[in-house]
Image 1 (cartoon, rainbow, N blue to C red):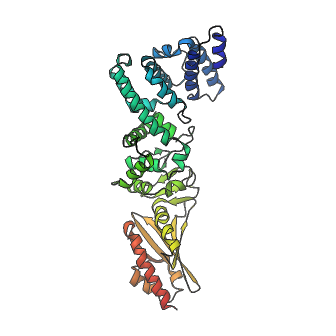
Image 2: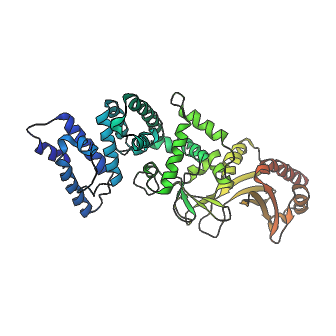
Image 3: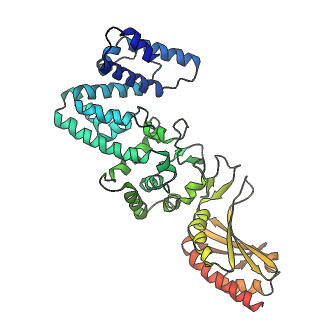
Length: 410
């Protein structure tokens, strides 16, 4: 409609620049509006007709926009953004090229207020009207705008966010907790699809408090990156140097495996400290436990192919529903008996346990495991609690203990 309406209105005096400005503005407003019902569509058409009256000088009209009478169908913040961009373009020719480039990005789709915020143009306009800026001020802000745009272009592609070992997410988590709340316990690591409720597009908009907080963290991350060096290398350095983090953030920052498991980028944090990685979005889907899964992927899966855990064979057991708990299973085959040791995270430690009936099938193993591997007897079997930081070294001693037991039973 916008295309045809402009042609009809100006068919005797078509101006290419005016047409380009008109189509750019209308596209930005329509694409970033929620027109999903008939009444909203009608409101959008009425708003376009209001704009059409000023279509030949749309930038001048928007630059002086104060009231939004007749334009209520378009988001107020998008109108404010279009007004700001119009004032910038009209007051210094250097703004058009970087703004056009940013708006053409497939993910931003004309919504680039975050870049104008990051570069300082919005704050600068609050204290000194754009019309009063000198050329040096415009050029300085344009340089900063372009630097943030380069970083944003590098980050916001589906490939970079989902297939680069999640270095952008992990580096951002090293800066701060950017996750969006989904419920009292569930949080989102954010998805790429811009129409989802917990998307990166929402973070860039910064409408809600948690979105604005995440956007602030993103700016802090961008401020630590230099455009003359490879971004991936710098992100990896931020990840490696991260310290003093909460335990759940540290686990996610350390390894890409937990994020990769979360197909819908959803985790659940219980009040008891347990953090679950959800394969979908609810607890009734398959889930893993963050700390045990990260340990399994980053340590056990790395040393097992070289036989580093023999005679133990590790497997991860996922859980579904509320009754079962995810855990690492360590299988020990001795003669015709398969003994299963279960490793679960609890209160900052790993608890390794085995049922009494499993060990009783192996002569003398109960006593040997208690004396040499430090297990204590409980009602249902035997267990040993080891801190997460010491668990890998403990497994070496435990493996040696099992080797001796196996030898004694030959």
